[in-house]
Length: 158
Image 1: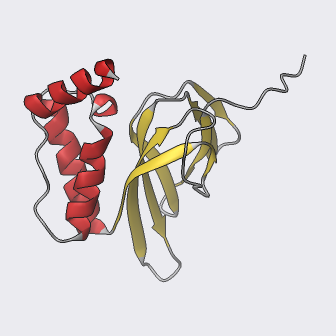
Image 2: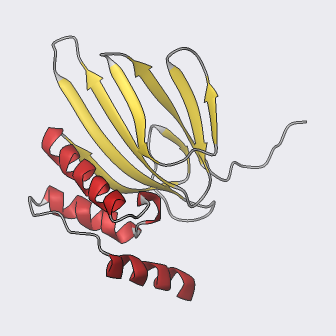
C-alpha cells in the first residue's frame, strides 16, 4: 500500500566514485540506508537528527574541492533552508569549503568527541558560531561541558 503522507525527515544520496566524487558522513546515524547502485546509496534522517556531510570532488584538471556541511533535519512546517542535495526540510548549521576551513571543522569535531560528547547532540548555536568565526578568520570557539549543559537545560526548559 502506498503511503501518501509527506515525508517527515530528509533524504540525500551519498556518491562514491573513487578519485572523482566522494560523499560520506563524518557523523550522524541514518534512519535508513538503501543501496541504489554500485556508486550511490540513499540515506534518510528523521526530524531533529543532525549530521555532517563531507564532499570531495576532483576535476579533470586535477583541481580538488572539499567541503563539509552540518545539517539539522527539521520537522514539517518549521522554517528551513532549501539545500539542492537534500530532499526534505533542513537547516544548514555550518558550511565550509576549502582545505583549511574543512580541517578546522574536523578538528573541532574531534575535540568534541574527545570530551566525550556526541556531535549530534551539540548545541546548534555552536555550529553556527564556529561557521561564522571561520568565515571571519577568527579562532574557532571551544565547546565545553558548561555550554553543553546550558544547551541541554535550555532544551528541556522550552
